[in-house]
Image 1: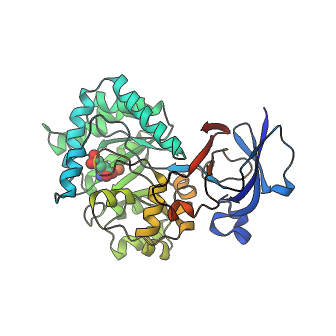
Image 2: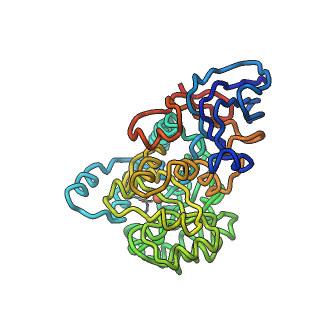
Image 3: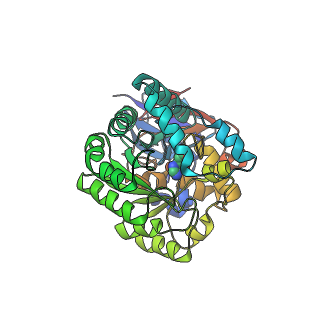
Length: 390
Ligand code: NIG
Ligand code: FE
């Protein structure tokens, strides 16, 4: 196996807690180098001290950051809802009802069509610096269509999530559908999934149904996560904390008790600011969460309805400019805490032994991700030590 040294890095974000004394939250190192051995990081430090390697890459004084970890996406779907978006931008509210439109299109698509559409979105993510990502089902809502959605997702990532409990599809009752999700659908989905998720919201599934579905998932060996408090106040966040879930996602409408429960439980609040941007809802109060000691992750929620972006850089820019997160907090939330939200410690941090997932920015500092919104700053990506961009 050959080694590569990436040297002349003007600013390196490591997220390594061992570097916090000098490098703060992001474990920053200036005038840095990273040695990659195969798929792993072998050495991190000052360029002047770097050991020899078989190959050398000159970063030209630019910034290198860990690959983004996008812990929440819905990439398996067919069709387009730009008309719904356009109506929303002229005054219609966002509702979960649009999900059924995508379900009809997804069921009608062939495996090949779905697979090539996911591949296109994954390529889009990778080109923008995302090196680890989660993908949910949830636009099949039948035994066959949920299982095949996950089988397709599994071709692209190990972080697959069964979201049969997205909405109750037309033509069935909530009781019958929960029985299907927790019975035959779960049995067909579980071999392809690591996680189970429920959309806990008015118009989707209530807290009791979510509890039942997550318990069935746990029986089948799937770890739980939750969509909660996206459109209304409700009990979803507190359920996630009570169950000790690793993460609860959206967290747009939070009571003081919800914030306290998150701080006490250690459940990560995954914020998805692209959703508020694309639905014109109020942003979640990231500042209150962070000030209360809650761990905050950022993810894209890439989906055809509430937020059709795959850009983690956009999420960082929104978090900084609209949610009062500092650039360092947002950078950390999009990498290390995103990894924690997937129960992963092998990605999201650049330290010896970690995955060599690195992003070279055409900028002197990670701060430019927020400072220069909308500008494609990702100019190089290494995935498990392999250059994938350009
Ligand atoms: O995370 N909230 C539920 N699911 C998606 C939206 C799905 C859709 O509108 O198609 C979300 O926002
Ligand atoms: Fe979502």
